[in-house]
Length: 196
Image 1 (cartoon, rainbow, N blue to C red):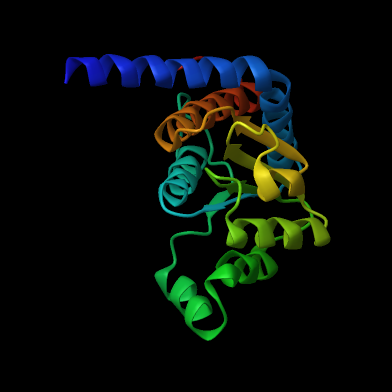
Image 2 (image 1 turned 90 degrees about the horizontal axis):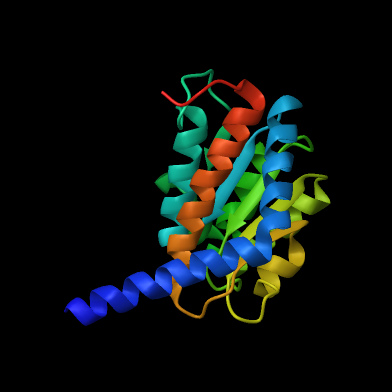
């Protein structure tokens, strides 16, 4: 068990360090786009499946409530939380459309669409990003994989943050790290101040 613990820790840290080194400029570009979105009165629309759905909700909560600084709420919405919408669209149309319909109903050109897909191949995330771009929104993606391009999802987004790992758990761990980092960067840029 101890060997598994040490191996898991080493691989997780390695994935995060490689991600930070390879994607620094893209991470900062996404932070700047988030700041610009909030400053222009837009909102951040977040979406993904499974663990990425949980990440979308987590990130939305950090923006709306607080991260490290007590400040006014910032507009962010996870498109993964309304079970009636998700099941109605999935049942009446297709699971591939569950984020598209919400994007069409809630998205505005001043918003930022952020899709999260560990594999970079989630069809419903891909379709929502395509629709967001057609609506004039900025788009971004959190993805993973050794190919480096973020798969179809990454190739569709304006800004892509791809974790260079083949291990799903370590990709997701790196996603959580960068989500927290983005919250801190955006908070400090907009509100200044110090952590509470």
